[in-house]
Amino acid sequence: MENSETNEYELIVIGAGPAGLAAAQYSARANLRTLILDQGLGGGQVANIFNLENYPGVFPPVQGHQWISTMKNQAESFGAIIKQAIVSSIDKIDGHFAVKTNSTEYTSLALIVATGAEHRSLGVAGEKEFSGRGVSYCATCDGPFFRNKEVVVVGGGDSACDEASYLSTLCSHVTVVHRKSQFRAQKAVAQRVLSNPKISVKFNSSVTQIMGDTKVSSVELTDTVTGEKSTLQTSAVFIFVGMIPQVSLFSNLKTDEAGYIITGEDMETSIPGLYAAGDVRSKTFRQIVTACSDGAIAANSALNYIRLLRNEEYK
Image 1 (spheres, helix red, strand yellow):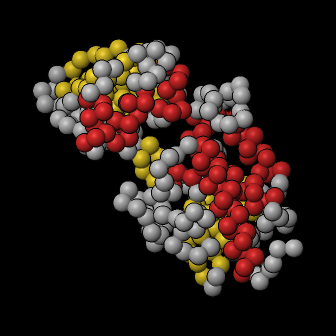
Image 2 (cartoon, rainbow, N blue to C red; image 1 turned 90 degrees about the vertical axis):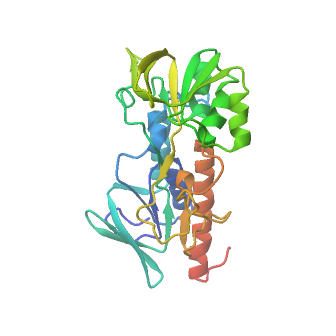
């Protein structure tokens, strides 16, 4: 590996969440000069998970920030360089990728986008304060913590209805709160919710405040027609009002209707040598384990791409 002062790398990974760190681990271990750029401290959404209990092979559960810290150390142990920087532009010039940041410019032969997606927030009082303490954006991750308890689901699309149905298999009761008079979800998906005896629905309602002491205990509901306010006791609030893929730097890539980057099974995008992995990628299931898988595949594809550029063969 070259020292960390170089600006020239064989592979640059943008994003230091599970997908990006998995990619860097595999590429660095394959002896590619690998740089990871992240605008924050890294970790992505995983850093906010209180107990990570559904990652294969990790038992008993560990805190998300501990797990991602180990993953970061593992990538660095193989030689990956991790730098905190805000990426301002990406170009492909003469077969090389030029990545400009707030401090300098880097070049690479291949590039992996692992910028993830952010949960669209409600923007109400208590949402940020109780994140990880009753406010969740992932039923699969956190639903089991509220087994046999009453919970609230906010949203009216496919995700909200699907997650409400899933939570009904764990929780004593689920209340779905939707600001409109009917669901946006597909008819069959919505009907499963409406016919489920463990789910009640409050249409024309919005959650306008999340309340509690050390954890969530209730929500304030506001009728979107009359403005009348009420309080609903709950142990948790699961928010599914959409995701925002972090693709502002990649407007020239092919995306699906929701804005997620479209790739092949090898994670390559519509631009040769540029790969996408993790939550930023168009796919049907977004979990830590699938993000890591994406990252590993993307790194292997990037390695093969670089070898092809150099007319190298496997020994």
